[in-house]
Image (cartoon, rainbow, N blue to C red; front, side, top):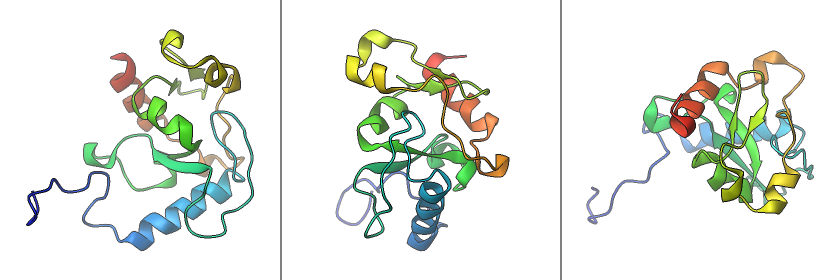
Length: 142
């Protein structure tokens, strides 16, 4: 707890500056062409630092030893952040999108999802298999 009796904010590592987060977010959004990796929905660049429609989401949480790197991040529609982090949507190492319990997602979400994740052309900028595996193990227990 901090001095005000509140829990510290989760998701931010003490050894990273806000500039590191801002720069990584900009790199992820640019690398994916301002598109949602799960649906392919495309938007223009943000006018300020935060994008009004896309969130940059970590695959393996920082508080579980996930790195602050592009290989551990995905641009997602803001509405898909929660289903992804809760494990309702997960991704195979070959980038195939899995929905383990479709009955838990809205029909509109299910029809909007691509068969495979949208990834950058450059393999260095793509999600790393070890982070996808971690997310699946969390989501599916495998």
